[in-house]
Image 1 (cartoon, rainbow, N blue to C red):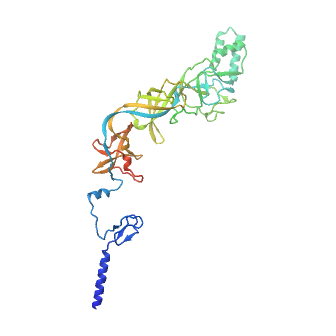
Image 2: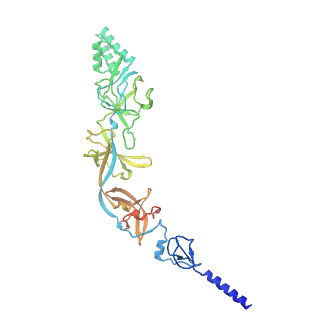
Image 3: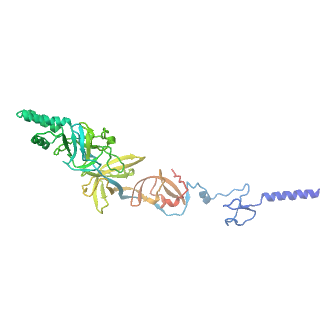
Length: 422
């Protein structure tokens, strides 16, 4: 009986000792377990004791900072700065393209219906000069009008009123004074009538947009021209692209053998001497760039020119808003349509809170800075404005008394997700 009691007592002590025995494990390899301190046979790290059942870890002030979520606070020793309220002159780089002024687009209409026997304008952006022959047309209506004039001259030469009316009719059908005089001199009708361009410029199609950084075609104007070689623009009006005509699919250039009707647009010519420059700028500069702002233009030839902003248009495309800026320059000798342009726009000095560009972290839809609070850096969302010379304007979210990390990128790990403090 005594032996049995001693045996039970010794077993109870063994169980109690086993319950309170310390075990050690590797932080990197939890499968490594030992009953005594040592090093991990895999990585060589010191083994740490596992917490006993019911044992609590004392949370100190330093440890509480470390236990915060990594997307709420960062402990680091980095250089800090403060924002400064000052007036900074702003120069904004912009890129653009030389395009033609859509206010100087002209159309050459058909004064009579008929068949095009010959076409001399065959491809887009083909140069044409004023007075140059651009087409030959066969028109029964024009032949009849010629015969009426010759008949009156031969059989009723004293009827000045009728003869004058016949000449005016030919003019309205597109013949110039020189063509009418040549008809009277030869006393013979011509089955084929030449059409001359009343403008100088380059040929474009109705479906062809002006070269632009965004591909947007502005509203255009045209002046109705005649068929004569000495007839200038007589009127101007707003136009829209004409619909495709038979033999002219998709607004392409007319070809020989096509039939045209009275009033149909034969060709569209743009004045190449009237050029303008279109620049695109981020929408954040809305309100800062105004009409009259100075622009330094560089065309890649080593020469810079200074011009003024003529028009500012807010624009929205593909989910992004930006400004379309129009600039006119008289330095067009060496420029051509489609010429790329680099520009520097000078804005008025802005009084605001400025910080280095590296101090602001761009998360795509948000911008944050890291504010130092009792040795801990916390991300805070801010609203930024213009950027110039490595500095960025902070509009909202930051006070001049707050310390922020000088380089926000240093505090971000590649796998971190920053959660700004509201």
